[in-house]
Length: 288
Image (cartoon, rainbow, N blue to C red; front, side, top):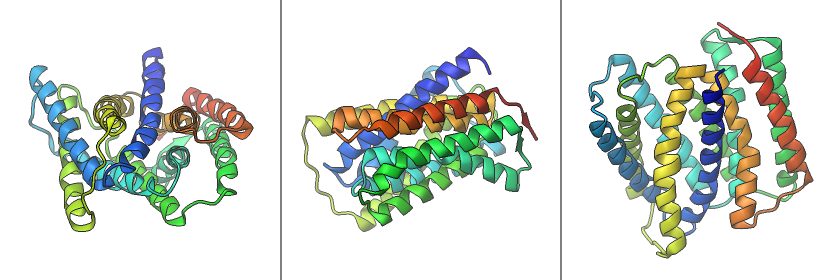
C-alpha cells in the first residue's frame, strides 16, 4: 500500500469519526432525518457543481449506476439515517465504536458471497481489531445504553459493509464527483420521504447547530466520501474498511473533547490493539 493511500486513509478515519460528534449536536437541535436529508441534498449539489467545473462526465456505466444506487441507499439512507436517529439516545462515542466493527462485516460478507480471502496475518489483524473494539466498548456497556439505539447502529454498520462491497472494482476514474453527487441525492430523496412521514419539524437554531451542520455537509459529507471511493478502488474493500477500526479512538477522543464524553484507560489500551490490527491487515496479502 502506498504512503498516499495510508495518509488518505488516516484523514478519512479522522473526518469520518468526527461526524459522530457533529451529528450528535445536530440531532439535539433538529429532527435527525430531516437534517440529514438536507445535508445530502446540499452535499450532492456541491459535488455535481465541482464535477461540472472539473469537466467530468455525467453519464454512468451500468456497473457505476448499480453501485451508486446501492451505496446511496445502504450508506446514506440506512447507515447514516439509522445512526442519526440512534444518536438521540446513545453517545457519539458508542456510535463510532460500533461503526468500527464494519471491517469485520466486510471481510465476512466478502468470504461468504464473493470468495475473498485474507492471509493468516490479515485474519490475526482483524481479530485484534475486534478485541480492541470490544475492550473500548466494554466500559460503556456497563453504564447502561439504549437497546434500540444499539440495534440501529449495528444494522447501519451492516448496511455500510454491503455498500463498501458494492463499489469494489467500480471504476470511478473521470467522474468520481459525479458518483459522489448522485449517491448523495439518492440518500437525500429517500430520507426526505421518511422524514415527512415520521418526524415533527421543530428546530432550535443557534451557532452550535449552524457550525455542526456546515461542517457535516462539507467534511464528512463531501470530502470523506470522495476519499472513501478512492480508497476502495485503490487498495480494495477489505483493506480500506480496516481504517474504520480507528473510529473508536478518533470518535471517542473527539466526543470527549467537544461533548465532554468520558475517556478512560480502556480507550487508550484499546486503540493500541486496534492500531496493531490495522497494521497487520494493511501489510497482509489479499487473495481472491
